[in-house]
Image 1: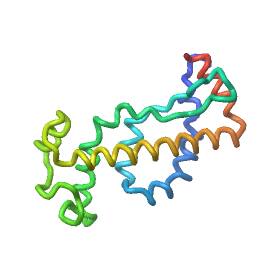
Image 2 (image 1 turned 135 degrees about the vertical axis):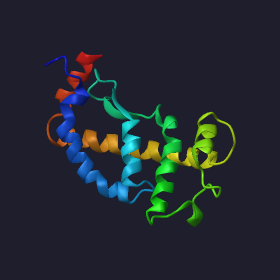
Image 3 (image 1 turned 135 degrees about the horizontal axis):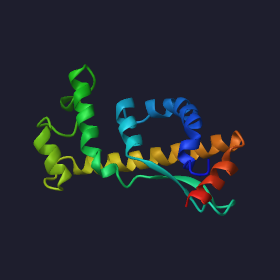
Image 4 (image 1 turned 90 degrees about the vertical axis):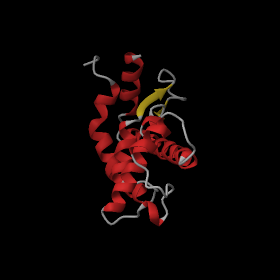
Length: 155
């Protein structure tokens, strides 16, 4: 069983934290669909796993930039379904679209760049909160040391 990554060993705990964290997501600027996409682009790591005093779960958000344009597309799609649309406070009055997404991904054009920066910062804060909540949950269940040990063995 030592071949199993520590992240695979905590699937049940992640599901429990997802349920308790759902209220925090509702209070955030992100929809459930956007949060799911953010979590897909986030990897959890344990910093300093070999030091019981300093070890902690952190969110690696290096891949967020790749999904930021899609967060806006999800929001725009929600507008078509009766949610807040781009015209009702969205950042891109032109309606966005494939070309704007491609240009944004290539770093061309300034439309939405401030929104992307703000979204990235908000997503980073929220994923770090989630990581802290996950570690707290593991500690309360008496699983943290086992998970930390598995991370040491896996690295």
